[in-house]
Image (cartoon, rainbow, N blue to C red):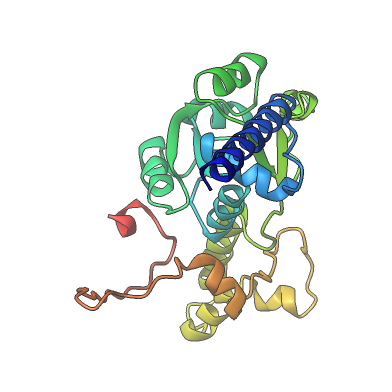
Length: 269
């Protein structure tokens, strides 16, 4: 009986040793052990080192398109680091921002998908800044939307990251942008100045859908008209934005209301 137990014990130790050797051998080559799928292998490796992704932006007059971009970026990795572009860089590349740097920082930090924030980030990804992201901040990928981001000289702001093979692309949220919001505001002022007797509630309904009646009726100026958002609040979309957690049995539930028009740092506070 003891002899059989000893033999089994030795045999088991040999099997374990072989398994460990196989595991270490494939681990060095970055391959999964035999019988272990690549998907599960990546999850195991990720537990050792979280996948860190970087996304930058101006985040001027922050809106739900920005939030949806941050949600998608966070889904790519385990930790999301966000670079908020400085006022000076925005002025040099796009024109003066409406919202100053410190307010934009408050807005970005308040988004639940953001783990870290870098202030005064450059507008374009340069060789030096990319090296800093990879070496100092331990980034794995740089992320941006599928809309083109072009510098004043016509070059791609993310060309360096793409060339390095460290770039990931997400889908832009159509029908919303800071420029569109400014357009709605200017259109609203113009409509009111044309006719003070214009029905206020009717005007509010038009702008809540992101367009003016004259553009909807086929009037001129499709470029200056704002686009209609197709970002529908379906059940699936609501779940994506929720934290999937309900209140606990002893939770204190608080209610607050507001128009939250042109959502800003004061709303966040």
